[in-house]
Length: 184
Image 1 (tube, rainbow, N blue to C red):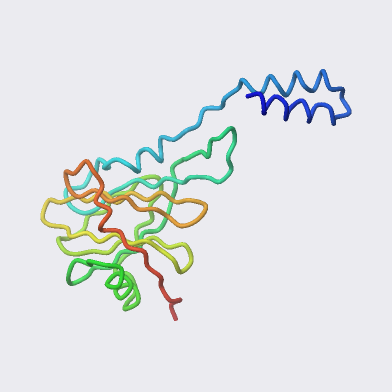
Image 2: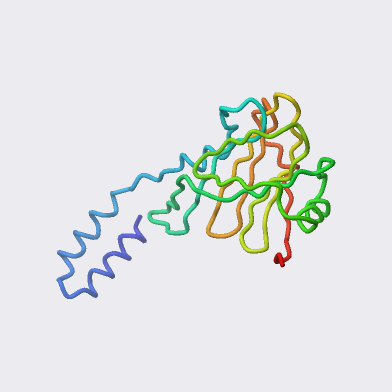
């Protein structure tokens, strides 16, 4: 706090309004802590309640890089999830890269804040990209299963958090970094 006061006093001394007036105005701001809304990013760390009976659901959060008072706010975000249906469960990054390179996605999900998509039983790879770099989550949907795939977008690459059906802890061994070549 002493360092912050000295910083504001230094600013006040350099202003043309007079150091006493400016110092008082700047110091009044020291006690004002703005509320730092973290609800959307906290929701990424929990399973999502789905309104579907089978498939995938989740929340999307956006962490800003515009920070004030040691707070980088987090709000509901949006992203496009590209989905590939695969013959087998994707088990590692090389398989994920191969699936992404082989064909166009089976479908796309436009996710705004939260999403839910019914999927037939089968194996899927859900990906989100920033340019050519992305992250993919491998899920295997059985009858009655709903996976949670939450995404936190940043002012850089995204982060995915996966919850298997009825789980309360994430299963991030299903998340793989991928790079895709530009489509022709």
